[in-house]
Image (tube, rainbow, N blue to C red; front, top):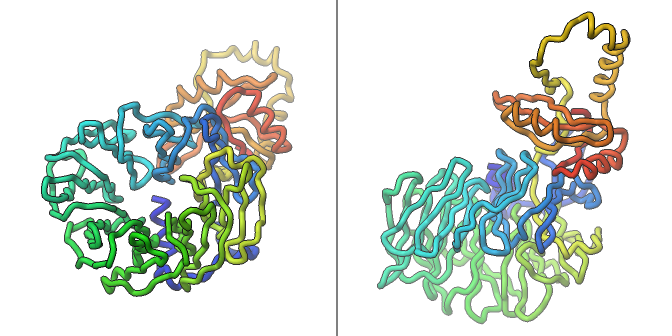
Length: 479
């Protein structure tokens, strides 16, 4: 749900009215919003790391053996998972709470899509549809082979299929296999799902048609002089950007007026469009050039051009308005308004990057977490008193108070099953320390976290995490 909340927050008064991003220091009395984060995975696969953006030297989470990424499908802020397509075209996930990254299914599939980063939909080799979710796999065979999938936030799924005389869109609600509604269309060449998800846009030659996803009603067709080649939309979907064949301008379709309401002249043929997830900037790749034209969407003003390679992950616009660029072996962060480079990450282009916002890596208040005590065999009090120093209880109490006061904690997993948490903790040893389990309550459920620490410095905590040979992340504060 987090991406949708961000969209609604960004578009509450329409994308047009947003001011450019600024980097002024926040008020000390202002409520703290989600943390700006960046997931980085080696493009060939391997360890996944999350950095606290823009301090890209600060790792807040790490896990090994992530499949090589190709493109991100979505982020589920409730579950703490990122769904993506790996380099083999297979669905994969990074699970921050479990400290793991893995392939979801090895079934040969295309058209992978997700509305929420949780349920992943795919088209199988025979034209069928499958859904991969934590609760299991759902399968559906449409009347004709599926061509594109449009999952919705309400759990429904729109499926585009090809008929002999054109195209058709079906609406189904998994796990039901019954078609709830459908719409017939001319042969579709291009498709676009708005980020909010209340419409999809379908281009048939020179015609652009919108479909309201809840009712499957068609909106009036909009005609262009030449065939539609590229489509993009603001997060709220109030404007659709259209590039036609051989065009050097971007036409702007106003969804409320159902017509072309303006245009932006780029001066060169346009090869690719990429919209800022918060609706402030549009990035444009001119044909035949390794660069990005930055356009401020509040005014449709061309800010300027930045050199960058174009990949599935880069360039992108970060939550603070910085534009991340791939330049040679490095990644550069440039200010979106001045285009001035502010950060250089040497060797960063060897990684796949994904920017997101979340609160899940923050330290919890000490009062919310209590050490877990598991029942064991009875202990004879006399024997216990003869072996334990009289002041040990006081030292343990003082140690507990010290640990909750601050420092840096190494966290290995957050589990719902106490026995699994206990077994994992017992298997983690660093020096003379053994991991322990602490509990917290979230939405009425008890979470069992496996931790070590806290430690006086982040460097020491990172060392302990590495020596554990386990997936881990480090956060500031006591467990």
